[in-house]
Image 1 (cartoon, each protein chain N blue to C red):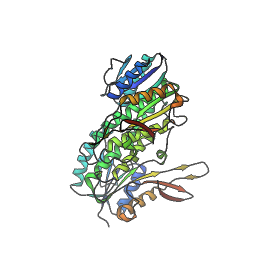
Image 2: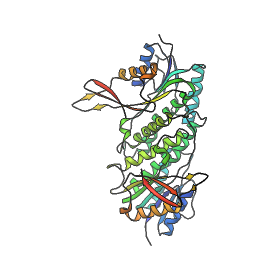
Image 3: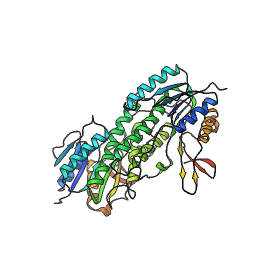
Image 4: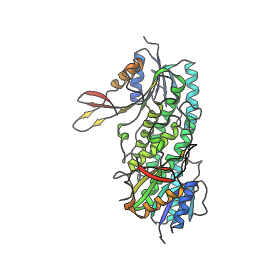
Length: 227
Length: 227
Protein backbone atom coordinates (compact mmCIF):
# COMPACT_ATOMS: atom_id res chain seq x y z
CA UNK A 1 0.00 0.00 0.00
CA UNK A 2 1.11 3.51 -0.74
CA UNK A 3 1.76 5.87 2.09
CA UNK A 4 0.89 8.83 -0.08
CA UNK A 5 -1.19 11.81 0.96
CA UNK A 6 -3.56 13.94 -1.07
CA UNK A 7 -5.82 16.94 -0.45
CA UNK A 8 -9.31 16.98 -2.00
CA UNK A 9 -10.91 20.45 -2.04
CA UNK A 10 -14.63 19.81 -2.41
CA UNK A 11 -14.30 16.24 -1.10
CA UNK A 12 -17.88 16.06 0.13
CA UNK A 13 -19.45 16.65 -3.32
CA UNK A 14 -20.34 13.91 -5.78
CA UNK A 15 -17.08 13.90 -7.75
CA UNK A 16 -15.00 14.83 -4.70
CA UNK A 17 -16.40 11.95 -2.65
CA UNK A 18 -15.68 9.50 -5.47
CA UNK A 19 -12.08 10.72 -5.75
CA UNK A 20 -11.62 10.71 -1.98
CA UNK A 21 -12.90 7.16 -1.55
CA UNK A 22 -10.90 5.91 -4.55
CA UNK A 23 -7.64 7.29 -3.15
CA UNK A 24 -8.47 5.88 0.30
CA UNK A 25 -9.02 2.45 -1.27
CA UNK A 26 -5.61 2.80 -2.89
CA UNK A 27 -3.85 3.40 0.40
CA UNK A 28 -3.70 7.19 0.50
CA UNK A 29 -4.22 9.43 3.48
CA UNK A 30 -6.81 11.99 2.40
CA UNK A 31 -7.46 15.48 3.74
CA UNK A 32 -10.88 16.85 2.80
CA UNK A 33 -11.64 20.57 2.52
CA UNK A 34 -15.35 21.38 2.17
CA UNK A 35 -18.37 23.03 3.78
CA UNK A 36 -19.03 19.81 5.68
CA UNK A 37 -16.98 16.81 6.76
CA UNK A 38 -16.60 13.59 4.77
CA UNK A 39 -16.45 10.70 7.23
CA UNK A 40 -14.24 8.71 4.87
CA UNK A 41 -11.51 11.36 5.04
CA UNK A 42 -8.58 11.02 7.46
CA UNK A 43 -9.09 14.63 8.40
CA UNK A 44 -11.41 17.45 7.45
CA UNK A 45 -10.99 21.19 7.12
CA UNK A 46 -14.32 22.98 7.21
CA UNK A 47 -14.84 26.06 5.04
CA UNK A 48 -16.96 28.86 6.48
CA UNK A 49 -18.81 30.25 3.45
CA UNK A 50 -19.73 33.40 5.39
CA UNK A 51 -16.04 34.44 5.51
CA UNK A 52 -14.33 36.45 2.79
CA UNK A 53 -11.66 35.06 0.47
CA UNK A 54 -8.63 36.10 2.53
CA UNK A 55 -10.24 34.85 5.76
CA UNK A 56 -11.04 31.49 4.14
CA UNK A 57 -7.47 31.25 2.85
CA UNK A 58 -5.96 32.00 6.26
CA UNK A 59 -8.23 29.55 8.06
CA UNK A 60 -7.56 26.76 5.53
CA UNK A 61 -3.78 27.34 5.48
CA UNK A 62 -3.60 27.28 9.28
CA UNK A 63 -5.65 24.10 9.56
CA UNK A 64 -3.72 22.41 6.74
CA UNK A 65 -0.37 23.24 8.38
CA UNK A 66 -1.66 21.87 11.67
CA UNK A 67 -3.08 18.73 10.07
CA UNK A 68 -0.07 17.94 7.84
CA UNK A 69 2.61 18.71 10.45
CA UNK A 70 5.24 19.38 7.80
CA UNK A 71 4.34 16.36 5.63
CA UNK A 72 4.14 16.99 1.89
CA UNK A 73 1.32 15.75 -0.34
CA UNK A 74 1.41 13.98 -3.72
CA UNK A 75 -1.64 15.76 -5.06
CA UNK A 76 -3.99 18.67 -4.48
CA UNK A 77 -7.29 18.15 -6.30
CA UNK A 78 -9.87 20.92 -6.50
CA UNK A 79 -13.31 19.81 -7.62
CA UNK A 80 -15.30 22.45 -5.76
CA UNK A 81 -17.67 24.48 -7.92
CA UNK A 82 -21.22 24.97 -9.00
CA UNK A 83 -23.37 26.28 -11.79
CA UNK A 84 -25.70 29.25 -12.22
CA UNK A 85 -26.86 30.81 -15.46
CA UNK A 86 -27.98 34.20 -16.67
CA UNK A 87 -27.28 36.71 -19.41
CA UNK A 88 -26.22 40.27 -18.51
CA UNK A 89 -29.86 41.39 -18.45
CA UNK A 90 -30.88 38.70 -15.97
CA UNK A 91 -32.05 40.05 -12.63
CA UNK A 92 -29.54 37.76 -10.92
CA UNK A 93 -26.59 38.37 -13.25
CA UNK A 94 -24.27 39.94 -10.67
CA UNK A 95 -25.55 37.77 -7.80
CA UNK A 96 -24.85 34.62 -9.81
CA UNK A 97 -21.50 35.88 -11.11
CA UNK A 98 -20.52 36.51 -7.49
CA UNK A 99 -21.50 32.98 -6.52
CA UNK A 100 -19.58 31.47 -9.45
CA UNK A 101 -16.41 33.39 -8.58
CA UNK A 102 -16.68 32.32 -4.95
CA UNK A 103 -17.29 28.67 -5.79
CA UNK A 104 -14.75 28.27 -8.60
CA UNK A 105 -12.13 31.03 -8.40
CA UNK A 106 -11.79 31.27 -4.63
CA UNK A 107 -11.42 27.49 -4.21
CA UNK A 108 -9.00 27.16 -7.15
CA UNK A 109 -6.75 29.97 -5.94
CA UNK A 110 -6.67 28.60 -2.39
CA UNK A 111 -5.88 25.13 -3.80
CA UNK A 112 -3.01 26.70 -5.79
CA UNK A 113 -1.76 28.42 -2.64
CA UNK A 114 -1.92 25.10 -0.73
CA UNK A 115 0.08 23.50 -3.55
CA UNK A 116 2.81 26.14 -3.27
CA UNK A 117 3.13 25.29 0.43
CA UNK A 118 2.42 21.57 0.78
CA UNK A 119 2.81 19.88 -2.63
CA UNK A 120 5.89 17.67 -3.16
CA UNK A 121 8.31 18.53 -5.94
CA UNK A 122 6.95 16.62 -8.93
CA UNK A 123 3.44 16.59 -7.45
CA UNK A 124 0.09 17.19 -9.15
CA UNK A 125 -2.32 20.11 -8.78
CA UNK A 126 -5.69 19.49 -10.49
CA UNK A 127 -8.30 22.19 -11.03
CA UNK A 128 -11.76 22.11 -12.59
CA UNK A 129 -12.68 24.28 -15.57
CA UNK A 130 -15.50 24.07 -18.10
CA UNK A 131 -15.43 23.12 -21.76
CA UNK A 132 -18.17 25.69 -22.44
CA UNK A 133 -15.96 28.50 -21.17
CA UNK A 134 -13.33 27.89 -23.86
CA UNK A 135 -15.79 29.99 -25.95
CA UNK A 136 -18.41 32.68 -25.25
CA UNK A 137 -21.23 31.82 -22.81
CA UNK A 138 -23.95 34.49 -23.34
CA UNK A 139 -26.62 32.59 -21.42
CA UNK A 140 -24.38 31.92 -18.42
CA UNK A 141 -22.00 34.87 -18.36
CA UNK A 142 -20.94 34.70 -14.70
CA UNK A 143 -20.16 30.99 -14.96
CA UNK A 144 -18.10 31.58 -18.11
CA UNK A 145 -16.13 34.46 -16.56
CA UNK A 146 -15.30 32.42 -13.46
CA UNK A 147 -14.21 29.36 -15.43
CA UNK A 148 -12.19 31.54 -17.85
CA UNK A 149 -10.37 32.87 -14.78
CA UNK A 150 -9.61 29.28 -13.71
CA UNK A 151 -8.33 28.46 -17.20
CA UNK A 152 -6.06 31.52 -17.05
CA UNK A 153 -4.88 30.55 -13.56
CA UNK A 154 -3.94 27.14 -15.01
CA UNK A 155 -1.89 28.71 -17.79
CA UNK A 156 -0.09 31.01 -15.33
CA UNK A 157 0.65 28.20 -12.85
CA UNK A 158 2.22 26.06 -15.59
CA UNK A 159 4.86 28.73 -16.21
CA UNK A 160 8.28 28.94 -14.55
CA UNK A 161 8.30 30.97 -11.31
CA UNK A 162 4.54 30.60 -10.80
CA UNK A 163 5.23 29.49 -7.22
CA UNK A 164 4.44 25.77 -7.71
CA UNK A 165 7.14 23.30 -6.62
CA UNK A 166 9.76 22.08 -9.07
CA UNK A 167 8.65 19.54 -11.68
CA UNK A 168 5.07 19.67 -10.49
CA UNK A 169 2.16 19.74 -12.95
CA UNK A 170 -1.11 21.57 -13.06
CA UNK A 171 -3.91 19.88 -15.00
CA UNK A 172 -7.41 21.25 -15.36
CA UNK A 173 -10.26 18.93 -16.23
CA UNK A 174 -13.17 20.18 -18.33
CA UNK A 175 -15.93 17.63 -17.76
CA UNK A 176 -18.66 17.62 -20.40
CA UNK A 177 -22.03 16.07 -19.90
CA UNK A 178 -23.75 15.36 -23.17
CA UNK A 179 -27.27 15.27 -21.94
CA UNK A 180 -29.48 14.82 -24.97
CA UNK A 181 -32.75 12.98 -25.16
CA UNK A 182 -31.43 10.45 -27.63
CA UNK A 183 -28.01 9.95 -26.19
CA UNK A 184 -27.63 10.49 -22.51
CA UNK A 185 -23.94 10.17 -21.75
CA UNK A 186 -22.45 10.87 -18.36
CA UNK A 187 -18.78 10.52 -17.62
CA UNK A 188 -18.40 7.92 -14.84
CA UNK A 189 -16.84 9.48 -11.75
CA UNK A 190 -14.51 6.48 -11.57
CA UNK A 191 -13.00 7.47 -14.92
CA UNK A 192 -11.81 10.74 -13.43
CA UNK A 193 -10.66 9.14 -10.16
CA UNK A 194 -8.64 6.50 -12.03
CA UNK A 195 -6.93 9.06 -14.22
CA UNK A 196 -6.10 11.24 -11.23
CA UNK A 197 -4.50 8.26 -9.49
CA UNK A 198 -2.47 7.39 -12.59
CA UNK A 199 -1.29 10.99 -13.03
CA UNK A 200 -0.43 11.17 -9.31
CA UNK A 201 1.63 7.98 -9.25
CA UNK A 202 3.20 8.04 -12.75
CA UNK A 203 4.27 11.53 -13.66
CA UNK A 204 5.25 10.30 -17.14
CA UNK A 205 1.55 9.54 -17.80
CA UNK A 206 0.54 13.16 -17.33
CA UNK A 207 -0.49 15.48 -20.15
CA UNK A 208 1.72 18.60 -20.40
CA UNK A 209 1.47 20.91 -17.42
CA UNK A 210 -1.05 23.65 -18.05
CA UNK A 211 -3.32 21.45 -20.17
CA UNK A 212 -7.08 21.99 -20.25
CA UNK A 213 -8.44 18.48 -20.59
CA UNK A 214 -11.86 18.02 -22.14
CA UNK A 215 -13.50 14.84 -20.92
CA UNK A 216 -16.24 13.48 -23.16
CA UNK A 217 -18.25 10.30 -22.86
CA UNK A 218 -20.07 8.83 -25.84
CA UNK A 219 -21.37 5.32 -26.45
CA UNK A 220 -19.96 4.20 -23.11
CA UNK A 221 -16.44 5.38 -23.94
CA UNK A 222 -14.78 8.28 -22.13
CA UNK A 223 -11.96 10.19 -23.75
CA UNK A 224 -9.63 12.96 -22.63
CA UNK A 225 -8.69 15.58 -25.21
CA UNK A 226 -6.25 18.41 -24.45
CA UNK A 227 -7.74 21.69 -25.74
CA UNK B 1 -23.38 70.52 -30.19
CA UNK B 2 -24.45 66.96 -29.59
CA UNK B 3 -27.07 66.29 -27.00
CA UNK B 4 -25.64 62.84 -26.35
CA UNK B 5 -25.13 61.24 -22.98
CA UNK B 6 -22.46 58.84 -21.79
CA UNK B 7 -21.58 57.05 -18.56
CA UNK B 8 -17.91 56.86 -17.49
CA UNK B 9 -17.25 54.20 -14.84
CA UNK B 10 -13.97 55.24 -13.22
CA UNK B 11 -14.34 58.83 -14.41
CA UNK B 12 -12.18 60.26 -11.62
CA UNK B 13 -9.04 58.29 -12.59
CA UNK B 14 -6.40 59.54 -15.04
CA UNK B 15 -7.85 57.92 -18.18
CA UNK B 16 -11.44 58.31 -16.99
CA UNK B 17 -11.00 62.04 -16.36
CA UNK B 18 -9.48 62.52 -19.81
CA UNK B 19 -12.40 60.72 -21.45
CA UNK B 20 -14.96 62.55 -19.34
CA UNK B 21 -13.55 65.99 -20.14
CA UNK B 22 -13.16 65.16 -23.84
CA UNK B 23 -16.81 64.11 -24.14
CA UNK B 24 -17.91 67.21 -22.18
CA UNK B 25 -15.92 69.39 -24.60
CA UNK B 26 -17.76 67.66 -27.45
CA UNK B 27 -21.17 68.51 -26.06
CA UNK B 28 -22.05 65.34 -24.17
CA UNK B 29 -23.76 65.07 -20.82
CA UNK B 30 -21.54 62.83 -18.69
CA UNK B 31 -22.46 60.72 -15.69
CA UNK B 32 -19.43 59.70 -13.60
CA UNK B 33 -19.35 56.58 -11.42
CA UNK B 34 -16.36 56.39 -9.11
CA UNK B 35 -15.18 56.36 -5.48
CA UNK B 36 -15.18 60.15 -5.54
CA UNK B 37 -16.88 62.86 -7.58
CA UNK B 38 -15.45 64.50 -10.69
CA UNK B 39 -16.46 68.16 -10.69
CA UNK B 40 -16.48 68.22 -14.50
CA UNK B 41 -19.24 65.59 -14.61
CA UNK B 42 -22.90 66.56 -14.96
CA UNK B 43 -23.71 64.11 -12.22
CA UNK B 44 -21.82 61.67 -10.03
CA UNK B 45 -22.65 58.30 -8.58
CA UNK B 46 -20.37 57.42 -5.68
CA UNK B 47 -19.28 53.81 -5.18
CA UNK B 48 -18.93 52.58 -1.61
CA UNK B 49 -15.94 50.19 -1.74
CA UNK B 50 -16.92 48.70 1.63
CA UNK B 51 -20.10 47.24 0.10
CA UNK B 52 -20.24 43.83 -1.60
CA UNK B 53 -20.77 43.33 -5.34
CA UNK B 54 -24.56 42.97 -5.25
CA UNK B 55 -24.92 45.97 -2.90
CA UNK B 56 -22.74 48.11 -5.19
CA UNK B 57 -24.80 46.99 -8.20
CA UNK B 58 -28.09 47.85 -6.51
CA UNK B 59 -26.91 51.24 -5.32
CA UNK B 60 -25.47 52.17 -8.73
CA UNK B 61 -28.54 50.96 -10.65
CA UNK B 62 -30.87 52.93 -8.37
CA UNK B 63 -28.83 56.13 -8.64
CA UNK B 64 -28.42 55.75 -12.42
CA UNK B 65 -32.17 55.29 -12.88
CA UNK B 66 -32.82 58.35 -10.75
CA UNK B 67 -30.19 60.43 -12.55
CA UNK B 68 -31.15 59.42 -16.12
CA UNK B 69 -34.95 59.63 -15.63
CA UNK B 70 -35.60 57.23 -18.49
CA UNK B 71 -33.07 58.81 -20.87
CA UNK B 72 -30.88 56.42 -22.83
CA UNK B 73 -27.11 56.83 -23.24
CA UNK B 74 -24.89 56.57 -26.32
CA UNK B 75 -22.00 54.93 -24.50
CA UNK B 76 -21.01 53.21 -21.29
CA UNK B 77 -17.24 53.32 -20.80
CA UNK B 78 -15.59 51.35 -18.01
CA UNK B 79 -12.00 52.35 -17.31
CA UNK B 80 -11.98 51.43 -13.60
CA UNK B 81 -9.22 49.05 -12.57
CA UNK B 82 -5.85 48.71 -10.95
CA UNK B 83 -2.76 46.57 -10.81
CA UNK B 84 -1.22 44.28 -8.21
CA UNK B 85 1.33 41.53 -8.81
CA UNK B 86 2.31 38.27 -7.20
CA UNK B 87 2.87 34.62 -8.08
CA UNK B 88 0.86 31.90 -6.31
CA UNK B 89 3.52 31.66 -3.59
CA UNK B 90 3.37 35.37 -2.79
CA UNK B 91 2.14 36.13 0.71
CA UNK B 92 -0.44 38.48 -0.80
CA UNK B 93 -1.54 36.26 -3.71
CA UNK B 94 -5.17 35.84 -2.61
CA UNK B 95 -5.43 39.35 -1.16
CA UNK B 96 -4.25 40.86 -4.45
CA UNK B 97 -6.38 38.53 -6.58
CA UNK B 98 -9.37 39.65 -4.52
CA UNK B 99 -8.52 43.31 -5.13
CA UNK B 100 -8.07 42.73 -8.88
CA UNK B 101 -11.44 40.99 -9.18
CA UNK B 102 -13.13 43.79 -7.26
CA UNK B 103 -11.51 46.54 -9.31
CA UNK B 104 -11.83 44.98 -12.78
CA UNK B 105 -14.53 42.28 -12.76
CA UNK B 106 -17.03 43.96 -10.43
CA UNK B 107 -16.88 47.27 -12.31
CA UNK B 108 -17.03 45.61 -15.76
CA UNK B 109 -20.03 43.46 -14.85
CA UNK B 110 -21.91 46.40 -13.35
CA UNK B 111 -21.09 48.46 -16.47
CA UNK B 112 -22.50 45.61 -18.60
CA UNK B 113 -25.62 45.54 -16.44
CA UNK B 114 -26.01 49.33 -16.83
CA UNK B 115 -25.67 48.90 -20.60
CA UNK B 116 -28.48 46.31 -20.66
CA UNK B 117 -30.73 48.87 -18.93
CA UNK B 118 -29.68 52.30 -20.20
CA UNK B 119 -27.71 51.92 -23.45
CA UNK B 120 -29.44 52.93 -26.70
CA UNK B 121 -29.92 50.35 -29.43
CA UNK B 122 -26.74 50.67 -31.51
CA UNK B 123 -24.80 52.10 -28.54
CA UNK B 124 -21.28 51.33 -27.38
CA UNK B 125 -20.10 49.50 -24.26
CA UNK B 126 -16.35 49.77 -23.71
CA UNK B 127 -14.45 47.69 -21.15
CA UNK B 128 -10.77 47.60 -20.17
CA UNK B 129 -8.71 44.42 -20.41
CA UNK B 130 -4.97 43.81 -20.50
CA UNK B 131 -2.72 42.73 -23.35
CA UNK B 132 -0.61 40.72 -20.88
CA UNK B 133 -3.61 38.61 -19.94
CA UNK B 134 -4.03 37.27 -23.48
CA UNK B 135 -1.24 34.89 -22.33
CA UNK B 136 -0.06 33.44 -18.99
CA UNK B 137 0.91 35.91 -16.24
CA UNK B 138 2.90 33.90 -13.64
CA UNK B 139 4.26 36.96 -11.83
CA UNK B 140 0.85 38.66 -11.57
CA UNK B 141 -1.60 35.77 -11.40
CA UNK B 142 -4.53 37.58 -9.79
CA UNK B 143 -4.34 40.42 -12.29
CA UNK B 144 -4.25 37.96 -15.19
CA UNK B 145 -7.22 35.98 -13.86
CA UNK B 146 -9.33 39.12 -13.42
CA UNK B 147 -8.50 40.48 -16.86
CA UNK B 148 -9.09 37.05 -18.47
CA UNK B 149 -12.55 37.16 -16.89
CA UNK B 150 -13.14 40.60 -18.47
CA UNK B 151 -11.99 39.28 -21.87
CA UNK B 152 -14.42 36.37 -21.53
CA UNK B 153 -17.21 38.75 -20.49
CA UNK B 154 -16.50 40.71 -23.69
CA UNK B 155 -16.80 37.60 -25.83
CA UNK B 156 -20.07 36.59 -24.17
CA UNK B 157 -21.58 40.08 -24.45
CA UNK B 158 -20.84 40.20 -28.18
CA UNK B 159 -23.08 37.16 -28.75
CA UNK B 160 -26.76 37.19 -29.56
CA UNK B 161 -29.03 37.14 -26.48
CA UNK B 162 -26.28 38.42 -24.17
CA UNK B 163 -28.70 41.03 -22.86
CA UNK B 164 -27.14 44.06 -24.60
CA UNK B 165 -29.47 46.21 -26.75
CA UNK B 166 -29.90 45.51 -30.44
CA UNK B 167 -27.03 46.51 -32.75
CA UNK B 168 -24.91 47.65 -29.84
CA UNK B 169 -21.20 46.88 -29.70
CA UNK B 170 -18.86 45.87 -26.93
CA UNK B 171 -15.20 46.81 -27.40
CA UNK B 172 -12.46 46.11 -24.89
CA UNK B 173 -9.27 48.13 -24.98
CA UNK B 174 -5.97 46.54 -23.97
CA UNK B 175 -3.65 49.47 -23.31
CA UNK B 176 0.04 48.61 -23.40
CA UNK B 177 2.72 50.80 -21.89
CA UNK B 178 6.10 50.06 -23.37
CA UNK B 179 8.18 51.39 -20.55
CA UNK B 180 11.79 50.59 -21.41
CA UNK B 181 14.85 52.60 -20.55
CA UNK B 182 15.71 53.18 -24.20
CA UNK B 183 12.27 53.73 -25.53
CA UNK B 184 9.75 55.14 -23.15
CA UNK B 185 6.44 55.14 -24.98
CA UNK B 186 3.17 56.04 -23.36
CA UNK B 187 -0.12 56.02 -25.18
CA UNK B 188 -1.58 59.56 -24.98
CA UNK B 189 -4.90 59.53 -23.12
CA UNK B 190 -6.31 61.74 -25.89
CA UNK B 191 -5.73 58.93 -28.40
CA UNK B 192 -8.14 56.71 -26.47
CA UNK B 193 -10.67 59.52 -25.88
CA UNK B 194 -10.71 60.42 -29.58
CA UNK B 195 -11.26 56.84 -30.67
CA UNK B 196 -14.06 56.39 -28.13
CA UNK B 197 -15.79 59.48 -29.48
CA UNK B 198 -15.44 58.27 -33.08
CA UNK B 199 -16.78 54.81 -32.19
CA UNK B 200 -19.67 56.39 -30.25
CA UNK B 201 -20.75 58.73 -33.04
CA UNK B 202 -19.97 56.62 -36.14
CA UNK B 203 -20.94 53.03 -35.56
CA UNK B 204 -19.48 52.11 -38.95
CA UNK B 205 -16.02 53.06 -37.63
CA UNK B 206 -16.16 50.44 -34.87
CA UNK B 207 -14.12 47.24 -34.89
CA UNK B 208 -16.30 44.10 -34.74
CA UNK B 209 -18.25 43.73 -31.54
CA UNK B 210 -16.38 41.55 -29.06
CA UNK B 211 -12.94 42.72 -30.22
CA UNK B 212 -10.02 42.92 -27.81
CA UNK B 213 -8.08 45.96 -29.03
CA UNK B 214 -4.39 46.15 -28.26
CA UNK B 215 -3.21 49.75 -28.15
CA UNK B 216 0.52 50.22 -28.67
CA UNK B 217 2.53 53.42 -28.93
CA UNK B 218 5.98 53.45 -30.50
CA UNK B 219 8.01 56.35 -31.90
CA UNK B 220 5.15 58.71 -31.17
CA UNK B 221 2.63 56.67 -33.18
CA UNK B 222 -0.28 54.87 -31.49
CA UNK B 223 -1.93 51.92 -33.19
CA UNK B 224 -4.94 49.77 -32.43
CA UNK B 225 -4.70 46.09 -33.28
CA UNK B 226 -7.58 43.65 -32.78
CA UNK B 227 -6.24 40.49 -31.09
